[in-house]
Amino acid sequence: MIAPEWKAGLTNDEVFFGFITSIGFALILFGLIFYYLKRARLIEDTPTSRIRSAAQGYVELIGGVSAGEAGEQKAPLSGTPCVWFDYKVERYRKGKHGHWHTVDQGTSEQWFQIDDRTGICVIDPQGAEIITEHKRVWHGNTEKPNEQVGGGNGFLRNLSGRRYRYTERFIYIHDVVYALGNFQSIGGGRNIPSNHKITGNIIREWKENYDWILQNFDRDGNGEIDMKEWGKVREAASQEADKRRTDLSAAPTVHLLANSTSRRHPFIISNRSQKTLAKRFRIYAASAFSGSLVCVYVAIVLAI
Image (cartoon, rainbow, N blue to C red):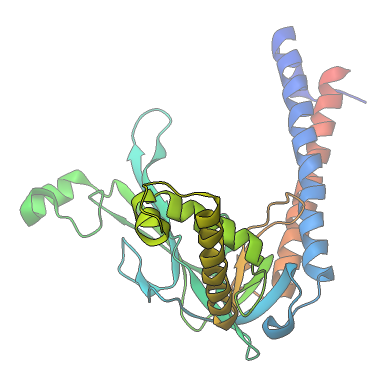
């Protein structure tokens, strides 16, 4: 292989540094190939579940978005109505290598809902990889878009320049979203603790107010609870546990989709279609493959 002309102008240290850097980037890109391909295969191979009959655990859901109990939100920079947002404010730093520097950013963690016509599932977006086609980028003179420099003086606004860049991403009400995460049904008689366990919890609660126990169970008035009286305490606690179990059984079923505890199971929410998402990850994998080939080529050139 004939070394390109640019290599001739490099010192030995620069050649060594370039070789190590190229190998490092090649390894990173090689790992990204499998990372993105795994996501694409996961999206393509996971069957879509119905909320009403979804199994507990890692599932794929598709449904229309609606606001949760807290209602609709408004994005902090633009005031855009939505159910989810994230935002970023950047300031341009001048200099030889001018660049944008993040001065503020945030992500909504408020729950929202999706409905697939068989049921409603609450979405906890915390920790999710959210991919949305709704994005807005604009520029201004102040850190907050609704502020005015110098009390609205036009000369000062022009003098300050367009130094700030604002970015917001949204999920809107009525969007159709694809969601891949950990599904759990709560209530409706599911996962109710045993009478024994609830009884123990109740007794611990009552012990925190020992005067109340004495008032209600100290039959001989000696200021102490003997073994016979403790039997009455346990009997009353067991009856209270039965009432609590009945209340739990009567509670409506709530379906929740949230982050998975397993790294092998990513939590993905997107208002793009399943097919589009899988194609996007495959394009990323192909780009990583191309980049790794370039890095390997540069490393070989530097090594010879």
